[in-house]
Image (cartoon, rainbow, N blue to C red):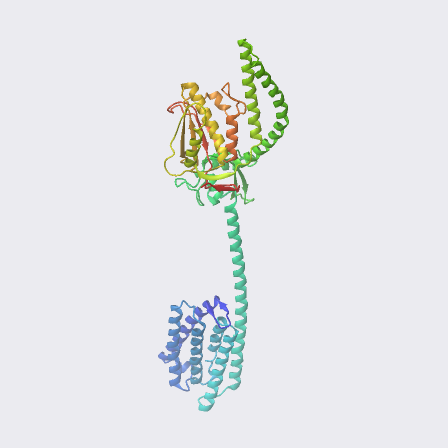
Length: 546
């Protein structure tokens, strides 16, 4: 970069210096070859041979110094250094012109190239100063020719050459200024385009929707962080990145191939990394369809929105009928209590009163559960260590007044971070443990449950299993296990697992039954699959529990 005192910067002037440096060396070597070969007598006359040869030798020497200096600085010479080199050229050419008989010899013409180089490299003031020095050198050598009578003076030619020198400096400098301005505008536009591209990339990377762009062969050209998280591409064994093929996600590849064959069909959901994903496809190149844009949506978000609408509708319904149910229910329960306390000794009457009271309480519990579900507040996500939280939970659970129970849990080892509403997790886990203790007691006579924690190797998602030693759940019952009001127990309401699963969905988690015939001891196992705490695709407020 060359800068003059006016502060003008010129990147293209480096190219001008490079061209001029090699031109100067070639030009000086040509003069030297002509001089040494003896052909100078036929090509140009020498009125003062000693000065002519000395000027040529000086021109060759200064040209070599100039080239060496330019190469050392990679042609990015300081303005002062370049000005000195160009002034030395003017001196050598003026001496050569004088020794050859004046301006009429034609050796003043190369001064135009020297001044043009200065106009391209400097600002207006330095360019005009260099032209003034060259003009004075031309006039000075004409005066010397006239005084020494070494040639025919040509004041008119010298004056015209001086005007040409100024005209060259002004025209080249103005052209250079316009070119410099165009380059600056181009640089501004390039910076703006680069910033816009960075902004677009940032927006794409920050989008909650997964974005994947693939070419016609299925090679990934672009993939954002949300898509990597949804497809489980953070694992070292199956990383997702540009220039990889879509076959690294077989389920998505099948949907992509299906869309290419039948683009009018809506793609079904697919599972990846423990997450249900909805994919949609769009062609970026309408003519040849060489690139395809794939949108990936976490289907749990849509399910949560549908769940909120369902709960709102359920709340309006239950609020209207709860009063109508509870009033007669309370009267029935109160009448049954009075019947049981009437003092009658008839065992059948007492038995009927107990049946009425028990089923009244069950019906009241159903109403309470439905009201609780409809009034459920949005989850307040908190990041916490599941193992530490589980220790506190079990300590509180053991203080309950029910019959003694054995609950096994290994909470040692490193922390296991999860994001969940602690109060809702307490509700879910209490329900699962109560079910496990009840079914264990019915099958083996012992109230027993075990809790296991871990991390899924494929998706990196934390999980928590609740096992019992009961009889397990049959294949037919498993299909309806999470339906409301479905129960295999004569004392249950059929809403516990349904509510627990809905609470898990509100916290971006899953609740599923895991059948394992090889489990020891045999029984039922329910797994809570937590969302990965570091791959959050929503912006709900969350806190960290200390």
